[in-house]
Length: 220
Length: 284
Ligand code: FES
Ligand SMILES: [Fe+2]
View 1: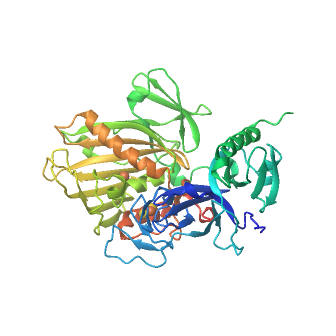
View 2: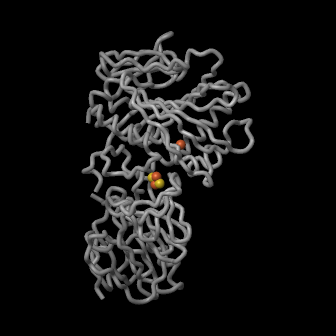
View 3: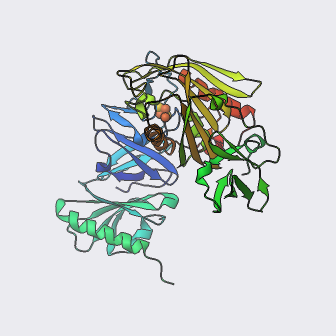
């Protein structure tokens, strides 16, 4: 299994538990502003973070059952992105053309992955059971996992494209699945999953120290 | 980008007289330019970065200036001369969006139940009935009239909700005035207005006022009511994407309730407004 992850393809967008059932959250990947929300059916959806009506961020939206309601004027979208209801005109059947722009969205390896709708790459499939551990924001832009590996006490066990991989970390029993979510000038997010609860605390400490390494000014 | 001629040709409110303490120079931004305002006795003097003076006038409880040597006349609000009205000004609130977005939000009733829940609307009554939008060609301004909306707290004294009638006036790309049926005076309208000081294409300062016939509420309570409403709007305004106003009709999708917003965007476009608007190429 060697899933290819590049900007044109599937990108890590957060740990699975970042978008809990009934909530909508924001994820930024490079310049793409994305709303990720999870309906009562447990499915995560990733949409362009802009309501087609007047541009309000859908990450502020309210999830009811399997629909997302925009905070600004209450336009309501079904799970596929189609507008189902416009409160200002309760009797109007919204035209089919009103749709939130959807990204591809899958969950594997304890994380949420998104791809632009035009991408034809197959979604990543990460075998094994992974438990979400911790997300860390790094105040510096990153070009890929390789840049992260140069720092900290970790060895790459299995590369999974440019942005993710399985690592061996000193002091941990199992592996760590580490993914880098680049956010352009806003820095990056590091997402870590572990194979079992016994590694949660140590992996969490490790990723924090990793951030420390990455943010440390490079000595001249 | 320097402002288009229409945008540049107007007067802009930069604060209230009392906001400029005697002798203290205040650096300000207007239309992406640095200016400095200083009070000298009964006057506020405004100069550009290069030291050239700007024209200044005091009107509607605010100090106005312009970057043009021959600006258009500032619009009239005859209500300011009416006996018995009280003016309450709410001060300056910075907002990270184009001032054009802030004006458009002000013209919009459909958000009342969702953003001003329990105050200006409730979710059970979200319907926006058809209203009239017209252009006053002579004064080159927009009017939206016969705007009716269910309001749960029509007045401080009212119990239970009722349909309230509104009128909106847009006499200036960065000014808008709401006329609301006065709860204590038959046939009279209370005014609530917004004077935007556009600092950058995608940032502005909102100066607002209330001009009402009201004997029961204190200035402070009128002020708090206005500020509370505006802070709810600011949360929306700072989360609209993009921060500049898209005026290409292919970009954002309006419905009948947005008739005033459609007219506003068309009017801006017809007047050649570019500064503060988003280009379709930025949409990707
Ligand atoms: S912007 Fe989303 S409903 Fe109006
Ligand atoms: Fe509002």
